[in-house]
Image: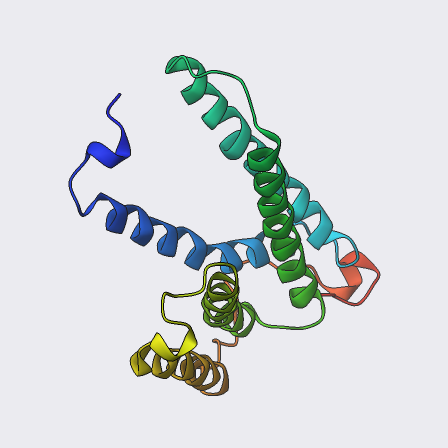
Length: 185
């Protein structure tokens, strides 16, 4: 199996765009799954349970199979293990917080817009803190800061002026009479 680094120079872009599509679908699919659980009180947690199952299938079994097929050594230095575990914890916590935002009446379009505009800004700040540029902060080009301002502005504009959804949903929603409790999206 060829290594990713041996592929063409645009391979990284293809994978990045695949991630954009996958994560772009994430919020809508998660919210739809939550509603589809037909449980106004615990639906979001039931949906997240299956997100966890999907993570296990994708993030545990798939890499384990690749490592096994490639004959990789099964040694895990503590630094790599610790940082990777921390990455998984903040990733899962972020996914859980998305569900909590939906439960607090945040719409998927608004929540995900804020998440996906804000995350790159946080990433840039943390990356600059951990790995300062040569020449210090004064060496950062002005367009970088303009990009951050544009990301914030874009998120605000998309959030404030998103189109209103149609009055009917494609997902069957339980009524108060069916569940005996008010709906909690």
